[in-house]
Length: 294
Image 1 (tube, one colour):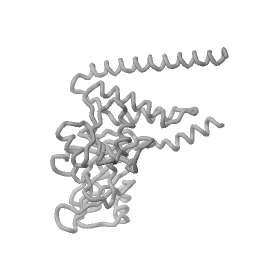
Image 2 (cartoon, rainbow, N blue to C red):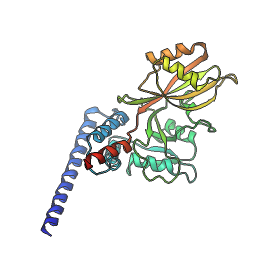
Image 3 (cartoon, rainbow, N blue to C red):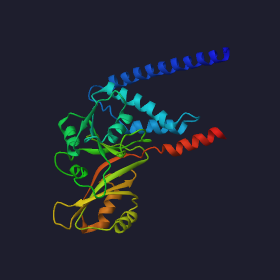
Image 4 (tube, rainbow, N blue to C red):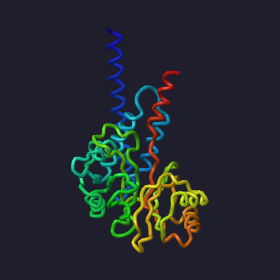
């Protein structure tokens, strides 16, 4: 019995140490905010991704990686909220709660979530200032009324895709809508393992095989074709939503080469977002389980 009591005392001591470190981390963040001044950028998705990847890489033992990430997401989001206003507009029509659950998992219990019944309403909430960030469903190839063309032109063109959710396993969502994109007026930042989202406007339709050939010749790797809609001009025009590996800029050499390869078929190529590649928790948990057994 004394052995069990000793173990409980040890657990209490560890809990006190964890709490003391959280208090210390909070104080450091407050010093950082003071040093940067009132106009500093306090939302840093790239920095957040780097923190989580580092922790996942060094993790060991039987404690699930997914739970580890959830703990740190609470810490990160709460301390971000302490540095400045942070509210999230979430596409949540009717009883569709999947994206709400994913957003709550990512941003934690302290950050305010605003349910919005329409996709364009999420974008409008950002442009009007009632939200800093929006969470929208992952585009589908044949969906009606896609939201992403709004990032190419108009008053929402300054909004960018800055994240993919979930960054880890989806957890206990209550509907089939589990994949989302994070949008904001923040400028995307590179993390070293990223995806870039482009809107490619062509004079006419082009097969995926042909597009893959163009991108491969330009040393660009297509990771997903996410959508296609008619262009704003003739009936033949097409606007494609394509995800590429890496952090690429519109004026960078890779995308410039894509435009040259397409030639007169390319009306425009716009980078409408970039984000950290999500952590593959299933693989990391398998690795830690194997290490624990061996």
